[in-house]
Length: 191
Image (cartoon, rainbow, N blue to C red; front, side, top):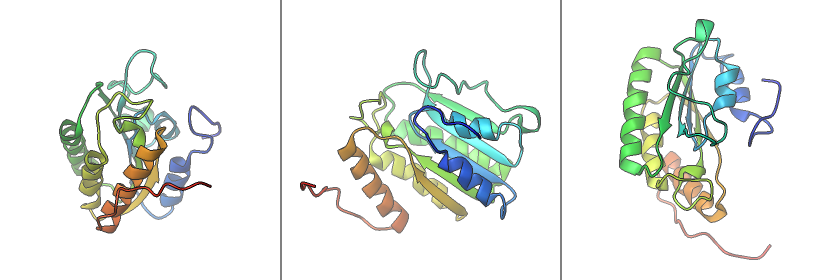
């Protein structure tokens, strides 16, 4: 909770969860970024009031090198961390199937009262960090699944290192949140 790590100078997800805990008894944190959500998991690894779920790339030498399926939390937080390592090349349908299957069980077992959702555009094909083969539509299906729970939900952005793809992804996801179809064409102009 007290230091920066990796790509995060300030952990907005942890701050959001701490604020939501003032009102809600159980918070579910879902991290759909290419990298393991290690900072949030570490911050809440000893509590049963916050459950963390991270779907991420996990392979030797890939940052942060954490998030093995056996990492499940500690003390009172044991079994309140769920890590789902994903292999390279995954596409929308298989990713959604994994996401839905895991979250369905988590929702039933944990009965969250609010959700903090981190959506990284670094899972999208064409991202220089990415070895997944996802599209914004695939991430959008996961977002729709969570939104249908009709819980208080804080939606945060995450990684994305291809600026045009990141803009297209967030345009699409904003449309999903609003229930509208937005153009994926990005205005190109000089600053």
